[in-house]
Length: 493
Ligand code: GLN
Image 1 (tube, rainbow, N blue to C red):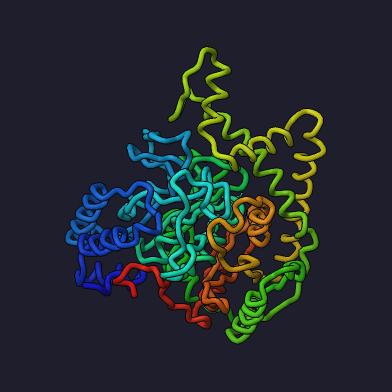
Image 2: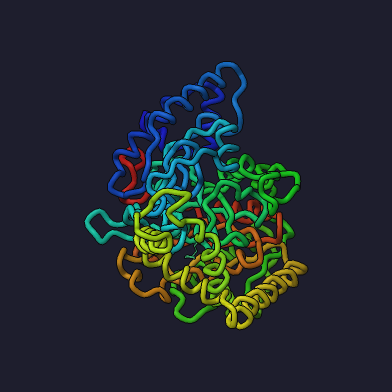
């Protein structure tokens, strides 16, 4: 039945409940799509056998009336989540062969809710990058690349997670967002990407990049599906001291709540030089759509926005340099033998880490070193506070903020990789939310003149993902983005 790939998770779940389709049948369709889209380089470790067992268990649960919210739904996982006894590499040579003896909290919650694991998905090495090109497996390819044209980037770092959902090779997927790694690839691939509030989902068992910024979140085709899977991922975890002990509300209700009377802020500082004209027009359209749906638009100011990117590129590498110190050739994965211990460390780390990761470790170590700590790291932390205060003030006036997700659509692979600063500019609209710990969502809202997807971003105050779902759903309805990319699996077309 070829329509299986065309269903949203919510639709698939309804048919599973009515026993009109089975989990095994659904999985078969997705596994065929994974084979068909192999050229997109999304799955670094497919888990065919595990998936079969999980799908059979889900069918049993449906027949016994014990099915949970995600039972039988095929889900891909960024290779940054530790999965018990399944290779977890963070797409780095240094972790090749690492078989975790534990399962991350978020993935175990998703499996407990009945989700079916399709496999581990490609990403930038240790989630550092905006194009998926720092992965040791090579880049994920964007399914919006023309059949006979250049291969385009899926974005990063969760490129494989975004591309697989857009291409019909995963119904939903999991990613992480430290500075934009869910929202930017979601925008580039034309899918919905949610970065929850810092503390909403447990970070336990996720390979750490920058611990004060990292959050797990889902990729889906619709806002409703995002609320469905997010409800299963969220919640307090005693194993993560930064996870919030708050009740998880019913997010699915928020999707249909409407936005009558909500106030939406448009920040003046997000009009940046060099922004793509198509994006500017789409942003205006988004504003009009929300107005038509009953919201009031308010012009606001976030005066410290221009410091967000430099601030992020001090704090994230500083935390990364400390987190990555554990890969020393002793505890995990790769080791290059040598005469002395110091030499072993040096050779292992020089060989195991790629260029971008080494760059971040150098920047981070420098920013944290005695003599520079006050000038860089401490200063960046102070600026971070000002950025958060800008948002606190804004959210006294508005319920949500509307911005573009990225300043441009995707680009050909290879176009930006040799220029780190240009690459870092991809994150200009996404990093502020991470610095302030706020939730953000990217919704596909239109195409550029060249036929490439563009996303709009909504931000809300801490733990108000419900408002993101209501406003994102209003955009989704008006944008009517239901296009299928040229390189999607055959049955999705
Ligand atoms: N592109 C950003 C970086 O390279 C963000 C990455 C992320 O969110 N993991 O740091």
